Length: 335
Ligand SMILES: Cc1cc2nc3c(=O)[nH]c(=O)nc-3n(C[C@H](O)[C@H](O)[C@H](O)COP(=O)(O)O)c2cc1C
Image 1 (cartoon, rainbow, N blue to C red):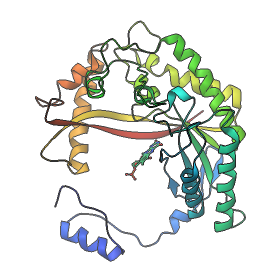
Image 2: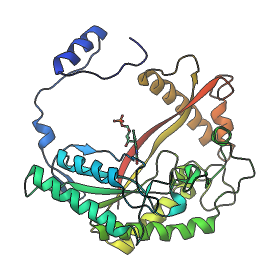
Image 3: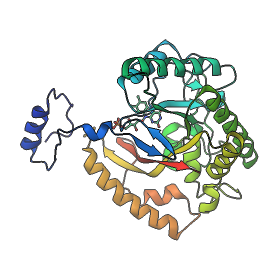
Image 4: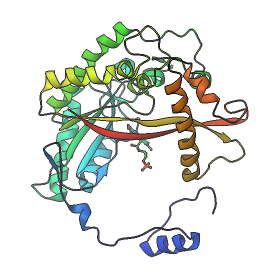
């Protein structure tokens, strides 16, 4: 088996043949009717089991409105008939954008985002029947260390990380976001959720994965003298407080989801092999994560990247080696 091959199959028989050639233990079911069944989620009905994941196209306008290609993407997703449309990462404010073309939800962009949603829901009805309404989620984000709202990167760090800071060229004296700033930011999450509700979304996702700010806070073992660092209680405080404030401000009508980091770890990849089969990486990563996690729990407060490093082969992250960050995200319903 090659390390990686493209998925070019046209028929199920093509897939079956390849699976046989590879000697894999994969089962197939030709009855797709379970995918058409509705499902209840937190008292709401999702009309079928198909989901469009959040996927940014980085094609919004400079002011955060959806652009022509953004609108076209959701037109196609909506016509497709998925029961859940998860609208892509949308910054809660300009400073939190991951790129200058990321969507941003503000009072100014609200009418455009609402128009895109209404237009998409209209097309979903047109293509799938008058009674068809997909469940819609808007993913809210603040990009943290990956913030690049304008031409240059403007990282907002919850803590320093030896591996990532080095890879991103962030100096050791780059200031961390303060507790006061995090407190103040909660109000902007609330405002973004309120606007999402006003636009007509069924839910918001308080994005806490992929190492953006809320995800980095979950890993902020080494953040000292901070109510958002160290102990589990502190590291989860931002999500908990934000969710509570959103709930109090927006009420029960808006469902609240949280796509969060399940585990994340750093795996070195030999530069000669550009890709390892995901399964191998997964197994290696999981083993690394278990080891690193044990250490982190045992020695809380210790430089977390240093303890990560102890689990990596020598030379990982150094010149000639690529470092692969591996994430597993899970989504929870927040109450
Ligand atoms: C182009 C692109 C944009 C993405 N944008 C987002 C995003 O805005 N928010 C998010 O949580 N995940 C984003 N993802 C991750 C996807 O939601 C998804 O989890 C990931 O692609 C893994 O699924 P797959 O194996 O089917 O591609 C993006 C992925 C791609 C390829």
